[in-house]
Image 1 (tube, rainbow, N blue to C red):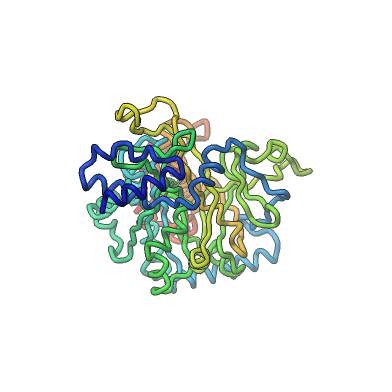
Image 2: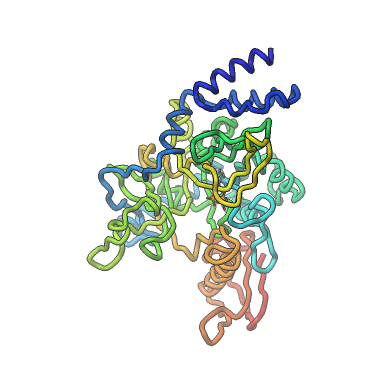
Length: 474
Ligand code: UTP
């Protein structure tokens, strides 16, 4: 049987110029042979050649839409009477949807976090400035606090990858699910994509194993469906999914205004944006492309557009994408029911592989291969309606990406302290400052103490903070 399968598989592979995958067949034992054949069976051969041609070998930049315009947005603070009225309604509706348990938290945590260089799932990285809490713990407290505030039992969906699924589940178990109900947490794995050499050959990670990597955060839209998460959401009445990344401890997971605006405008997928610091900041750009809300990557936005200014000197394309979305459950159902494909993005990486001539595993020192990923924001143009709401960087965005420099733990911790200080000051409490204006104390606020500056103001605290003090509020 296995010999017959071998022959059939070899023929198929040969048709697609990938027969090297069976180079070591005769060296493998039965179970390794089966394992290898199973992996090869997972490849979608119908689309393989065109995928390699279009995304692996093609050096041409992404094709840009013919018409790119600025996208309409809601500001963080409503300015017009119409917007003020709409925001008031949105807040009420958002709070109602939350209290009815119709909104779930969803973190994408399947990434490899290579830039940070942390050994283990990134969500276990300890980041809070005083208590050294992990990202997962910070999110869990935010989720629990929102449940207490709005009176619902929050559900949390966590996407992992085959590479970090088991350790992620273990971390939650050993932390007693951070005080959340275990049955309200749903782990599921995203898909993978095979890796390629520069000339389009699928790489072997071992003699019986294809080289694969997670299929990008865009894979979440398929994985939510395939895993049964969407079906479960439908059963328990969840209508909206609050999507966020594992690296941003400032995330406001359940923002009633954002949820409410999304619902009032019948949006299928909505986003938060922040104003870019500079024309070439490395974030995606929200635009209207051929009439549809679309994110154009910083590397794809032509300089002429990136630098274009309004008469008041502001950038025309200033809307940075920060991976904060509300996604309607029915949108994910609709996409999956009729089938959909997001475009691939190519990343040139160092990928260990088995040299089919020597049979040795090579750990390259320079990038040698290609990983293909899909991005969740590429689903925006597929949405019938999509709103974009401004958020303020210091309030909601401090991702931990790199070991040093920009977006490093040091920067994130500083931003966490600054936000806490600002919230305290808004509530009328004096924060000690140094002569240069920087904060002369450390402050950490647990979400279980306050989810916003208003929550702190409502407590009428009578606090005196001394210079150099470490203040933790929980
Ligand atoms: P990043 O783009 O920062 O990628 O992911 P990464 O893999 O975590 O880090 P690097 O590039 O290797 O340093 C943004 C978010 O998307 C998730 C990540 O876990 C993070 O929350 N993600 C990324 C997935 O869930 N799956 C993926 O395949 C890729």
